[in-house]
Length: 147
Image 1: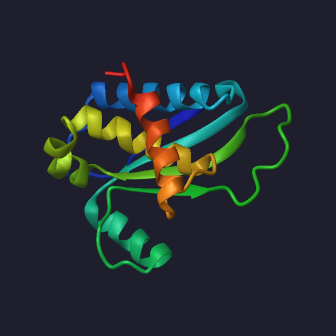
Image 2 (image 1 turned 45 degrees about the horizontal axis):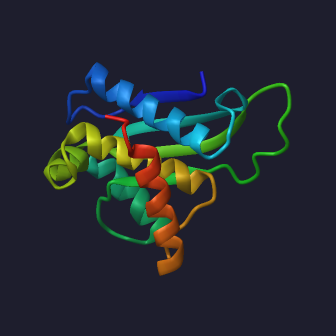
């Protein structure tokens, strides 16, 4: 399976719909970006605010929770007989639940974060305004018609 979802938090009840939208969003994003899902693997990890705040502090020097962090593999290597691990997408479900009303509900926000995180694994960034425009355009294309 190209998408593995791990739930290591207890703050938010994870529904089948949440697993489903996260998987569909990831698969649609891969296909949209021209990546054959059978050639790669990604992990999506559901965590709480405390867990993601620790990661944010350790890896970004920011002492607060965030909604999503992406951890690409240092060198995914050349495609071989086995799928290449692109990396991990870590999502705080507490933040998703708290901020969902700003993004059209829990499922919409979760889908957005999966796509956003996966685009980072595929090399997109949003530090410069031009790069942010490209990335946001890609997100909108992938999310169109998803829910």
